[in-house]
Image (cartoon, rainbow, N blue to C red; front, side, top):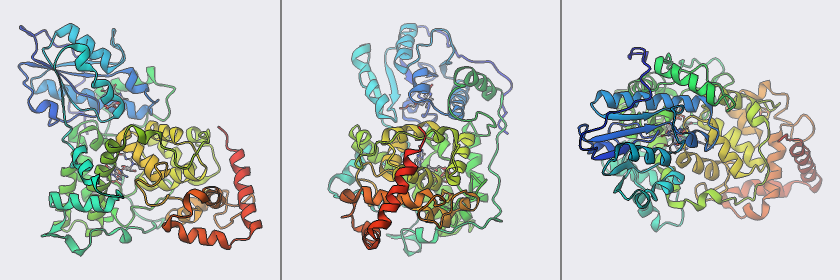
Length: 529
Ligand code: FAD
Ligand code: DLZ
Ligand code: SF4
């Protein structure tokens, strides 16, 4: 579908010297692949030099999934050629180009030495780690460095800080309402369209097994992507995950097709089955656009307006459209705001003092817990899992088992092709692990096997019984859940939203509690690391 460019071995791209030198070197990072990005808004193809570089430091800052690296490098290469077609002088450094220093910093140093630009310009990096490095460049290079805001988001870090300033609690719901009003999204004058801000209570259906789910959009890899496969196979063969089959879009044109097909084929049932999981159905009625949004191939506002338009054309009902828009206008913007407000400390938080290492099966999927086996297998294959799989299967298990936040964060950053720290860290440390002590969530998303049983068909194919609470056949989520509450009683029992489970715990006999704790201890002691 995407192979509209003839076979090419154009890479690396080596621009000519410009008589009189280039005005500015514009560095485009791998998640800034938008022609409207701030650093390109004032760019002049006649006077500026644009650079993209594949660097080992980024590919191995954590050992990213093979498919994620292939997606990024291919999207970067396609974008570089588009820039060249628009008349820009483009330097594109491939990972295996002789002389590649392996870091942004090294490649900027090399480009300054080669082309002597009079200034350096870039859009601010999306991750704290990289931004901290970039902030030292001006002094080092003795050349003006312009760091422009990333205006692809609906809420700037400053706007979020203003919103957060006089609040005791930073709850998503109020943030989301403000964004709706500010951008006039799903509004009827000053009121929310349909009379409610949130239709979440309509969006919790489990899926019947005979549900007909549209197949996701598939893109045949073109020559550029195939070249990247060779590179990834040569350099990252020992990284997690499957490179093939590869069906992601790697251009804006492809990403727009994914968005359009979601709107026409899946959005109408997105709300109903938003939380549902079915064995063998990795993609469900989700949009699969996070890859593209997070690297700049789609903008949040065009996705929001496309969904609103579907409502007005009667293509999808309000509960689906509002549910989808809340994810983008609400959660996505909210987690980014929180990230920049709370970093760098946020990364070190471990409120529940969780210490356990990651079990081996997070990498191999070799486990008898069928829900985890299914989700981790699909993650290895697709570099994707949908939200409830991430939160209520892998995240929930990590919370209940007391896995260390650093280990869990690293895993999530590695395995999902949409994972960048600004979005991954708050979701993992805040939403899934309660490691931030409740900055993000009002209570831990802890749950026994009952929730997974209600929302999926995983339990049917499991060697454990979700109905058994203790004993060798019992679902581990069941005793781990109670063990979690007992273990964290001092920290959590005063939380009003946990009143009910702690009252239920208080009604249990001492022997019952002990049996649950013993089963949990036996299970956890056998978790291979
Ligand atoms: P859909 O379900 O179709 O939702 C539409 C869009 O809404 C998504 O593409 C995404 O951009 C946005 N969105 C939805 N939920 C969230 C959320 N909680 N935070 C931010 N944006 C959201 N999302 C990432 O983009 N990168 C991550 O690394 C990431 N890590 C996560 C880790 C955990 C533990 C959890 C619970 C969630 C994580 N999410 C992450 C959020 C969410 O799971 C993914 O955005 C979503 O699954 C992507 O699939 P989709 O595009 O089909 O999403
Ligand atoms: C994730 C990633 C990877 C794997 N490789 C590169 C790369 O080689 N070059 C690049 O520009 N960007 C890459 N990225 C994305 C960056 O990690 C991301 O742009 C920064 O973390 C932003 O702060
Ligand atoms: Fe998961 Fe428990 Fe169900 Fe097995 S029984 S699939 S471990 S929730």
